[in-house]
Amino acid sequence: MRPYVYVAISMLSFSLLTGCWDKSELTEFGYVQAVAIDRTEEGKVKLTTHFYNPTGGTETGGTKMGGADKTYQRSINIQTEADTVFEAVRDIPIHLGRKAKWDHMRIILIGEQLSRKQNVSEILDYFSRDHEPRATVLTLIAAGEAGDYLNTKPFIEQTVGQQFRKIEESTARYSAKSSRVPLFELAIQLKGESEVAMVPYIYKNQSTQKIFVAGIALLKKGKLTGSILSSKDTGSLLMLINKYKSGILEYPCTETTGEKKTRKESYEIYSLDTKVTTSIKENEVTIHVLTKIKGAVGELRCSSLKSIEEGRQIENKINELVKRDILKVTQLLQKERMDAIGIGNQIYRKNPSLWKRWKPSWNERFAESRFEVVVETKILNTGMDVGTPFGEKGG
Image 1 (tube, rainbow, N blue to C red):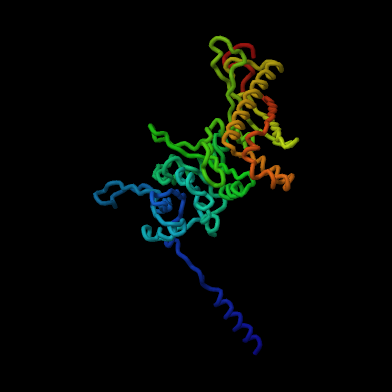
Image 2 (cartoon, rainbow, N blue to C red):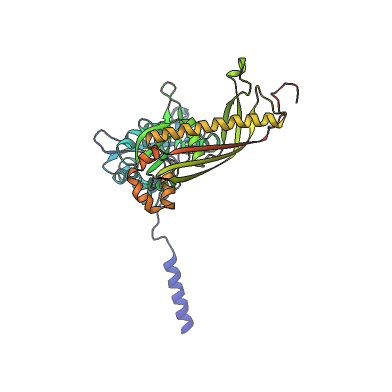
């Protein structure tokens, strides 16, 4: 009898394993590509959710009424308002007829007005607490109404959410005119001792309505209180915090007479390494910055690289240029009393007891700190051509 008992138990076990106890159909969900968060005049959360439309694309043929072509949108925007982000999310099915699915969200846009009046930690709390959104979703601060940007037609990607994500990633990687800030990294910045966070900035040209992702919005204690760093200053700040990937530096011609006075040449940065250290003496803070740059000449217009000495002249010009720009950014940060470099975090890690005494007055101490900047540049090669401008003799 025992074999029959074993068979019966096995069959019962297999029967329990069949089926899906939590089965959900794809048609029950709307897949979010991007979300924009703004503030209404009444102080409510205005959520614009950007969904991928699986039936999107262009269809042709005689099956349409009248035989005309019919174009379907690749994406759909749903706007909801509530006192909290979660309530606004749960109101989406009222309009869409599907539950929002956040696993594939590409980007979060936060309106500038909202970020100036409310702590972004409160705004983003739902997306960090819910189990669906990924910690790698990118963030942006948007000039004007964030929801308006989701009406933009993407250039090459399927949805504008993916388009904005690729722009943010590419800008940070190739031009250093903005940064790449995932949700988890923003959370770390917001919890830092310096209480300063950096979020990439997106804006429109008022005349052409073209969209740019360039510059950085500086948040203090979760709010946008300071100014927006320009794209040029952003590159210098990325150098300071050692997050500069690659980019182009323009420097004036070595010979600065006649027509050559206003002409510039370019240098491509292959790698950049910055070390920031602090020294404290008699309650005075000195911040030492050492930046090492390696790259190649991108354009020669009026200089030449036929000798070691000529190469050193160009390297020295780049050293002076980078040092000047870094000091300019440090002065701006000190004026704004925004320790975006993370000097306060360094002091906290090295001497917690000292930081405990200094933290209440750190903004003023940071503003009075002294910076010493040293830049070392190396030209690794002259590119595919010789060390003279294109078409000139002497190579």
